[in-house]
Image (cartoon, rainbow, N blue to C red; front, side):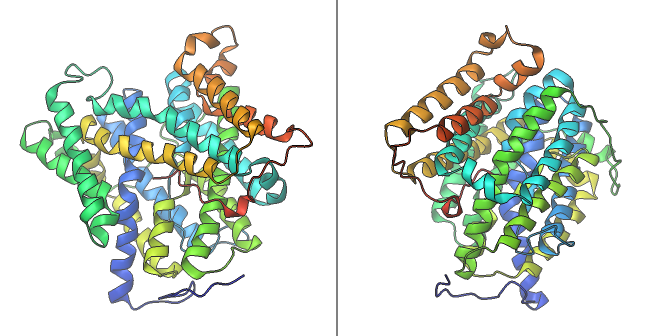
Length: 447
């Protein structure tokens, strides 16, 4: 069904460069903060060096640009050929942190390759995936992702776990300043200023931190002006926990991608997404995630904030997003830029992280609320969230399990997703359920 909607440019339209360039840059501004925050958060959580952090930021930018091109231009059955922006996935972060702490970064990237294979397989068999992940189940998955990320956000808010001045007024002041600027820019900002409120908050916080002596730019001077990232910088390893954890998360993020693509075509063009676009988009996610691992970048997925930007502007042109991808690639080839981002104080990142993580949680609540909840649904939520987050909050409760299984349990997301899927499948026959078709969901977990 097609709705009457004002479209400035259609999918295959090519706007003049004087319009396409700023429109493409706008997409980069909207997603930049989220894309670079995730590798910084992971690096901070595992105590990585400044050099390694800068490398992770650099490849996050480069790979986001390349995988976005894969979606907008497409290669055979790979890619949605829609104005889809790809970036580092928040969903995988919950699993990546405990994996990296236990097995090292090589396990994260090895598991991500397997996750890419899973996503490619799902892209070619979407019919049964829709049945496994109705809005209730996908909402629980997104909700638990958000809950699991909040402690990490608050550690950053205080200045970084293990920091000598953790919880100091200087760190809290920086974080609260960033948070306040984001809220003001979002509420009162117009156009790009409002859409890029997170980026505005980070820039203001960074500037204040530098002025007060919280930032040392020595590493920036040492960094090269131009460099092509070395593939397999951190190597690859394939422990069972990494394969299972990343594989399970691949299913959850594929559900998010389905919702993003459906929302993109509905909000931007007033039509339903086609099966070919859905399949190509999920397959593109998988190929992009596997490709990212080769360059030691975290898994990539569609960014929902850019979906909202398309709906707001009415610019459905995939060529505009292709230009935005070019900006990302250029940024990823200049280590000085990556280093400038990498030395950003943890408290500055924390002020933005609590907002983004909270929005993930809110998106899960929105998905769950889309269903008319009955007693069985409430029981599914209670058990899945209670058990899943119970292990995450009290890791010692999982000490009796083998180490591979323990890592999955304490992630929170894996047990919650498994319980939610199983309990939803075995709901009583007389249960009328009242949940919506998966095509109507619009999860927003990559903020």
